[in-house]
Length: 70
Image (tube, rainbow, N blue to C red; front, side, top):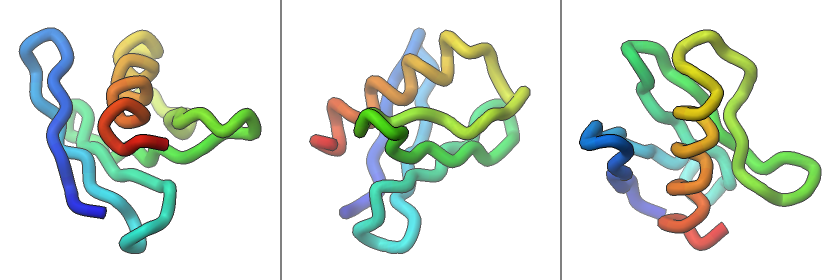
């Protein structure tokens, strides 16, 4: 899988897959790297962090799911 960009509220975020084909993604949010991965229900979610608001992290997770076809 290749890196891709998601747009939320006119801000662009580069999503980079970790370890090639792994369902884990790295996103720089407000200058901090945040890892997104599948939760127990199979949805993409962010690790616990104070890099951004929960609504932004949930929005990013939804966009990653849409674009990655998870």
